Length: 246
Image (cartoon, rainbow, N blue to C red; front, side, top):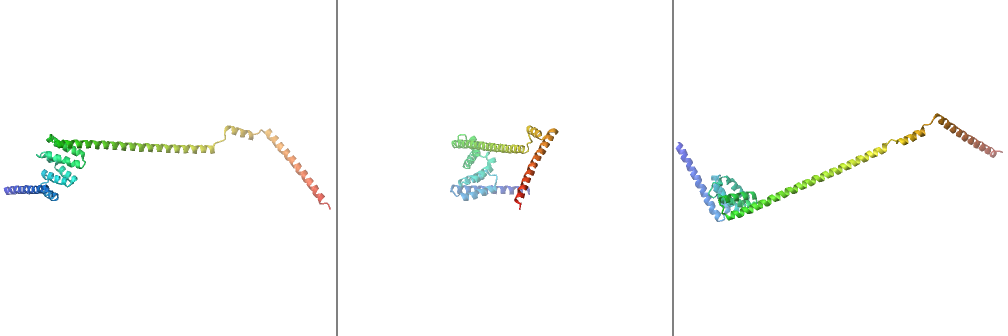
């Protein structure tokens, strides 16, 4: 019974491998004819037979690249990157991965991929050119990012300085308003100066003798005034009597 199960398992594996190879060959024929949509179906069928197949993912990625579907091509290559290093066509795999990365302007991935390619094929001039090109683009990108970061930091510092100046101006205005209010209160509530107080006290405070003399002068003035009033009344009465004489 165990032998039968083992033989059946081996048969299924062989059939699966055979079906995968058939799908790969079919996909390759379609790829060479430019039938990319049909080749896409064939390669995906082959990948369903073995999801870890580097060959199926590599071929599918190349087909996607021809259709300018660079994001999906990069995804397929990334899925096979772990197992690709042990494959005999590893240099070609990394070259294509770098080429896809250039199309996506993913310069760091491109540099890493072409470096892996050159480690396996140091004499590949095209790989060297692409490596140098991707490295220069990566340096430009990093410089631009640094410049943008510096500009952002400068803008933030300027904003902070402006806010600080505004706060200082507001504080100065508030302090000036407070000083003005305090000065106004002092003007309104300022007590008499000592000199004025002394003058007022000198004017108000009189000795008893001075007060008596002032009272006598007032009484004398009132007496003289009353005598003048009485005299005028008397003259007025005389005048009236004359006038009323029959």
